[in-house]
Image (cartoon, rainbow, N blue to C red; front, side):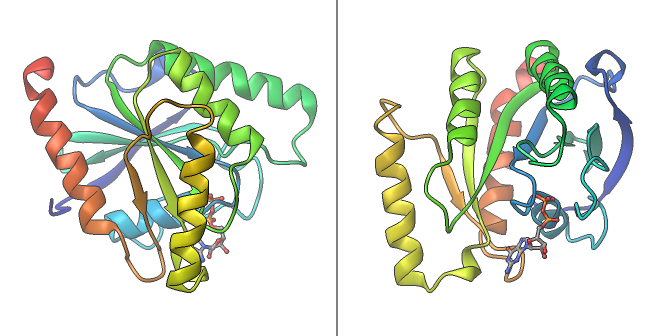
Length: 203
Ligand code: GDP
């Protein structure tokens, strides 16, 4: 898929106000600092489409971007930021849960995890939440350039093996690097294929 246009549409804290267009939607989520903004900018080949975190709280909104006038890319807040107070975190979880429960256009969620780390409880809990609610998701391994390739492969194999302790089968996964562009074509082709598959549903 070629990215012909990528435009910011709006930010919301309540899914009720999200854009009404009946087009397929893809959500991006992960722990703060996992590399979500960098990945979105890499995929879209725009330097500052998604704001890189730096300041916690800045991206505590549901951010809609319209791509090629065909699909929505949704940048969701990073979860698990230690400095966010417990009260705020509860509210945050509520509006995120609400997004997943209400958003009919959502066809796939990309759960981003750092290639260097073993599965973290917060990510496993989040995947369990998606599974329980029958929300399709893929895993995106980020920052692949930070490990030499032999270590990277080993780490990802370990990650998948650990996931199989909780899941009967593995979701589709992508290995990406925002620095090198690794995984970009594969990722965009995947979205392209889903867009074709679901086209009838969105007529
Ligand atoms: P977010 O909080 O998930 O949106 O994460 P950011 O995109 O802001 O990235 C967090 C930090 O990781 C920043 O310092 C980025 O420069 C760095 N980073 C993100 N992706 C990559 C990557 O693929 N490779 C490397 N080496 N650094 C990355």
